[in-house]
Every structure is written in C-alpha cells, then in structure tokens.
Image (tube, rainbow, N blue to C red; front, side):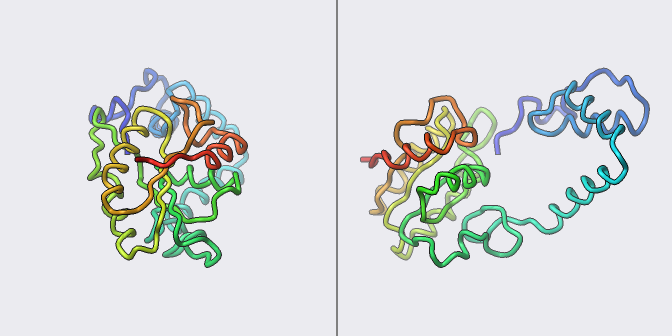
Amino acid sequence: MARAWWAGWGKPPTLERMYDGAVQDLIDELGRLPGIGPKSAQRIAFHILGSDGVDVQRLADALTTVKEKVRFCATCGNVAESELCRICADPRRSLDLLCVVEEPKDVVAIERTREFRGRYHVLGGAIDPMNGVGPDELRIRELISRLGDGTITEVIIATDPNIEGEATATYLSRMLLPLGVAVSRLASGLPVGGDLEYADEVTLGRAFEGRRRVT
C-alpha cells in the first residue's frame, strides 16, 4: 500500500496539543486515518463527544466486529467474512474473464456498472516507488498463479488512471502477454488523474464496452 508522506516520522502532523488526556488521544488517533486532517479529526472527536452513548457504542461495536470477522478472500484478495468472497463463491460468474483492480473498493465500483460478469483479482495497491511500493509488495505472484491452469483467457487491467495505476498496468502487461493470455485495459471514459472509486456507473460501463487489447 502507498504510504503517506509522513510515514516513518512517528505520529502524523496534528494540531498543537490543546486538550488533556482522552480527548487529545482521540483526536490524535482520528488524525491517523487516511483523508482525515488535524482539523477534521478535531471536529469528529467533538461530534463523538456530543453524541448519544448508544450511537457511540454502536460505532465501537462496528469497529470491533469488522476487525474480528472481516478477512481477505483466499482467492482474489477482496474483503470477505469467510474463506471466499461472495463473487468467488458465485458459480454464475464467468471463469474465463479476470479483472485486476487495485483495492476492494474498486470491485464495488465496477460491480455497480453491471457490465462485468467475470471474477476479480485485487492487487492491494499500485506500484509506487516514491513510497517504497514495488511489485513484490502487491499480489502479483498470486495473479500469475491463477493463470496457471489455462482457465482464464482474458485479463482486464482496471487500475486507476493515474501515474501509479498506469505504471502498474504497464508492468502487468509485460508480465502477462508472454503467458499467452489476452490482456486488455479499460478504455476511454475514465479521466486521467482520477480514481476508479469516484467514477460514475455510465462512465465505467462505457470504459468496459470500449476496452482495448494490449499488444
């Protein structure tokens, strides 16, 4: 996974410690979450402080439960509550098509289009040398292993249309083409520099319809 720029420096940047004890500890922990800056962490902390105890307990229970029950699918790497995720366990899904994505959230984005009926492989991130993420940190070996029996005839690379996603797609294409499997990449419709997670259903659907073969 890509690390934040402050990774390895200890705690993320926070507001000056203006509060005592538990309140400041909560703000600091919230500030560790991705996309939550110091001011947002402070707002969330005070929202929690002002919330009903039942609501706070429900949040705490949800956090505990997700850590206890949720795992990653043994086959594709998607989130699951058993050994296989619901997609890998669905016998109606095509066995010959495999869509490679960066994160489990991308599986959800593609499923919303209802255009793809194959299966998935979640890499767990994208190649990002600046943050110390290379091919060995991703689930690429597992991907190669899944192609071994010849069942999969086409691999659709659906990494994010940004620098890291394009680098990952290029690397995967070079790895997969010599194996004799057809390799395609999502086509037009996805903006460069955007994230797959935020693309709408129509845009993603058109991208699947217009995917191109990698040569």
